[in-house]
Every structure is written in C-alpha cells, then in structure tokens.
Image (cartoon, rainbow, N blue to C red; front, side, top):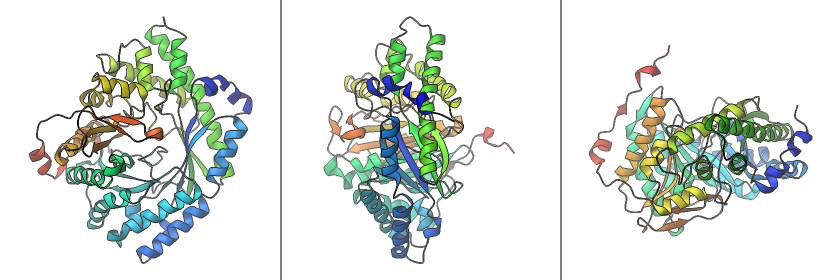
Length: 451
C-alpha cells in the first residue's frame, strides 16, 4: 500500500516542476448497449455512460484535493463504436453524437473509442463506419477517433491506409474554420493497445472488464529539473537519475489509480508511464534531450538521447507500479511540447527526423501540422511508413497529422489548451500515389510467426 506521506515527497515536483496526473481514464464496455436500431443503441449508450461515469469528475477532483496532485484530464474510453454499429454503420454518427453529449454533460474532457480495428481487413460495415469519421468529428467536440491499420502479427492493411489518407483530408476540410482541428481528434495506429488512457487513441478493448480505471502520469519537467541538478553526470549516471525520478512519478500515479478504482467501483487497470509534455515552458521532452547535451533537438544524437530517456523511464516506472501498460514511453507531439514547437519554427527538426525518433519512443508522428494542399496519397504514405516501423519493431506507432486548410510551410495553427500550437512543417514533394494505389496487404514480417 502507498500512503500519503510517500506522495508528499513530491511536493516540490508538483509546485515547481509541473508534475501532474495527466489523465484518469475510465474504460467502459458498451457491448451490452447494442440494440436493433441506431436510435435505440444511441440512447442505451448515452444512458450507460451517464450512469457509469457520473462520479468520474467529482472523484478525480476529490482525489486531487486530498493528495495535492493536479489531475489535468478526466476521460472516458469505450468499446470500439464500429462493433456497436455493425448492423447499421451508415448511422454510426448517431452513436458518436450520443457519446459526445454524455461527455459534455458530465464535464469529461475527452471521450475516446469512435474506433475501428481493420489491421487485417475491413468488412463492409467497417468501411462504412470509416466513411462516417469526418462527419462525426466535425459535428462533435469531445469525441475522439482511432483506426488500427496494422499489426506485427497481421501486416499492414494498405487499403485501410489509403482510405485513412482521404479521411484525414476530408476531416480537415470539414473543420477548416478551426484550422483542421478535427484531425487533432483522429489517430491512425499500428499495434494499437486496449488499455491506453491517452487521447486521441484510447478505446476500451473487448478483452477488458466492464469498468476499468487507467491512469496516465506526466512529468517531463520533473526529469528536466533532476538532470539540471547534475550537469556533469555521464550518460550512465544520467540514466540512473531518470530511473529514480520516473519511479517517484509513477508511485504517485499508482496511488491515484488504485484510489480512483476503489471509489468508482471499477477495476484498477494500468498506469501508463509516458512522459507527456505540455506547451508550458519547463514541461518539455525536447528540453530533456537538450539538457543531456544536445544544442537543439533534431540534431544528430537526438535519436540516441531519446532511446536512453525512453528506456530509463520504463525501467524506473515498472518497479513502482504493480500494473504497467498503455503506451509507456516518451511522447514527442510537436504542437504540445514547447521545445518541439521552437525547434520546428527554426527548421531544426523535420518530419524525417521525427520519424527516426519514433523508432525508439512511444507513439509516433503526433500533432504535426502539414500544408493544407498535401495530397491524400502523401498522408497515406506517411501513415504507411509509421505503420511499417511499428510492425517490424513490434511496437505501437501512430500518426496524427493535421493538413491545415489554407496554410503553407512557415504558417502556424493554434489549437489552444493542451493541444498547443503547431508550426506548419514541410512534407517530401515526391509522389507516392502509385504505391498507395496498389492497395492490398503488406505481409507481416517473418519473425511474427511464433507458434
């Protein structure tokens, strides 16, 4: 058991170093809500979320007051909606709007699970569901969508990859007045996990229980301050500092997760160890890498520094929690990290370098604004490249890009809040249209065969 005294050791981290619990996410199974029509299913979904998640926000706020730890987001993840609406996929938007209404009324920051799993193929109902994503995201405010297009076991569904490039473009066009913000609520995965508490990719896996609490901790600022206190440490000692710091951060997350689960009458799922940055100065993963000795993130050595950081965070965090899961690593979202924003503005970090960095950290190309006239085939090719990294390396990778309507390289899109602001970055001018147009399935690698 963890006591309050152990959390109080982190008081300086909370007050001065941006330590927080980034999210308490309540996962809900909605399979019991399936009815004979979209209207009936939407009503059942709304009622289930209202009933099961009613206490989430008050409970999180109470825990935050009791333990003195900020809990930034209260979120809900649900069973992939494509499964709920398989009998009436053309009307999936009705269920999406019902979920969004429940989130607004309960004060939930984001609700994830407008999702489909099509990594080996898409049935007709799933294709129709995918087509509903742009309309749904443009008519809701808190609902998030995700699509899994590949896995290390099955390969990459290139037909789905092609479709997602077009869907991202249409979503941006439908939300042009907000800079294409609908795309900030849409992520395309390879090797998606069922217990991820972070948006936009959270969904409640069918292998999970009815009601589960997953917690995501943060703390880039804490790690940065710890490294600043040891400027002469070699990399071995720096890794040890990061491990010890991650241990302390995760202990706080473990306590909050277990208490939240108890009070919400839910199962404690996992603690996600990810270092999740914010646009606030002093809370940046990029600045951690620069504190290790890089003059600017994106320079040669960045991938090696990130690999060390990611590994040390996992080694320290896994000893502090009985259940670790989710994505667990270091997020590098461009628009949500002040160091990444500044590096992108200077042109010292590129999409190609970010792609290399995703080989050694969690998630992938995240919250990147690209020119609004980027072809759908180029977006699909970006998705395919990231999916290949995930498939070959047996890790979760993802793409969340925003083709900002009317914007060109050097412009900026401001989403506000935790979503931050994104300098528009250049994409390669080569044409991948014929490659993407081939469709089919990229087979899984030989090492996927483990039976």
